[in-house]
Image 1 (cartoon, helix red, strand yellow):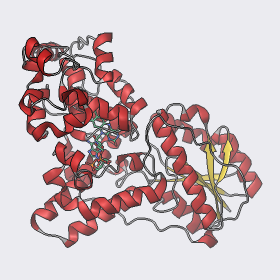
Image 2 (image 1 turned 45 degrees about the vertical axis):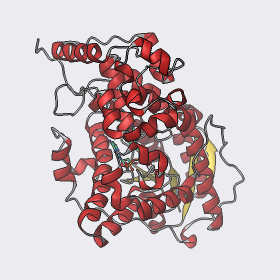
Image 3 (image 1 turned 30 degrees about the vertical axis):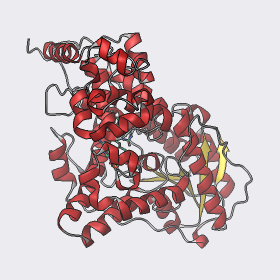
Length: 461
Ligand SMILES: Cc1cc2nc3c(=O)[nH]c(=O)nc-3n(C[C@H](O)[C@H](O)[C@H](O)COP(=O)(O)OP(=O)(O)OC[C@H]3O[C@@H](n4cnc5c(N)ncnc54)[C@H](O)[C@@H]3O)c2cc1C
């Protein structure tokens, strides 16, 4: 008999560790409910994740098995269950965050003392970071090495006779969230993936930055798979296989569009690679600076940014999308993060922590890796990258449909005035939309101050 310990992988399909356990022998699936660990997740994501765990339990019941749920310390719970079910081996999937890896070691040691072996598998990623070099100067060099590594097909769901039939009435709580949640679990994930593959994949690169499209025809925009991937509702091989299947069938521009989606998945892989080799990615600057960065960390600025009241329409639209949906489209995500760390000169860790609390798709590696990239403390080969929030709106929000969707105070303002809002005169702003804030920082002053502070930190001034 084996146990399989579910962690950020509450699913029966395409689960590497579960597939290995059930190949090896009859398996009891287990979920250890750890209230303290769950508190480190944002409330919204926790609600989605726990609903996903419940869906996985339902699936096990449909297969004639059950997910055994116990609260406590994994090392104690798993040792007790191993004894109860007379299990020889506990299988689980690898994690890359340092605290999780330490936890795995504690579990390995406790089980080994109890005479039970452990077996862990690569599941979260298409390519195990240990197969690649330890460091790459930029994403394209990472991609050059990552891309040729063969990606395996999704793992099959175990057959019912490979699963034990424990009878257990316990389940996980379903905390409420302050926003509407997407349909949880594998079914919700697969439904979204199928719709995106049918309607959006072969035009992905052409429309992924088109913000009006994201509000007017969301199925033909980006996939919005991130909440499902980050909570483990669907396996990454399944997402890759769905995109690859189309990629192999289409040609020309459609093929390039589908390939771009696969390329974007490699950013996620690179962030995990970074975390694997740099365990303090969430804590310290990845890049070393000869001088300290003179962060300002102005409380009033930070609060205005969080509320979406900076007087920069695209920034505010992005921050309000985050508040309302627990998600931000990648384009405004970059713009709000750049605005905070450059125009307002607020330390990236403050922004990243706010995202952790608010996002449904929070992913430790991708969140901190991307914040560092945007803050110019990460792997970017450009010394100081500053997004101009005005030209980004003009370029990517044609007709300002995205801004109007999330900033109703500007709904009736002509498009050109919305885009140019931070550069209009005070009087004109008062006349056009008295309810909407004035810019909290001057566009050019903010830009020049950020440039100067970073050049000083880099020792270039
Ligand atoms: C400051 C900042 C913080 C971010 N925090 C997170 C986070 O916590 N969790 C997260 O999943 N993504 C994060 N991203 C990356 C990216 O914004 C989201 O993955 C993307 O917007 C999710 O929407 P989607 O599923 O529709 O993306 P799509 O465009 O449909 O892309 C498909 C998938 O590719 C992956 N992907 C795409 N771009 C990136 C990227 N730059 N880095 C890593 N993976 C990527 C994701 O898994 C995504 O679901 C962050 C980006 C920035 C700039």
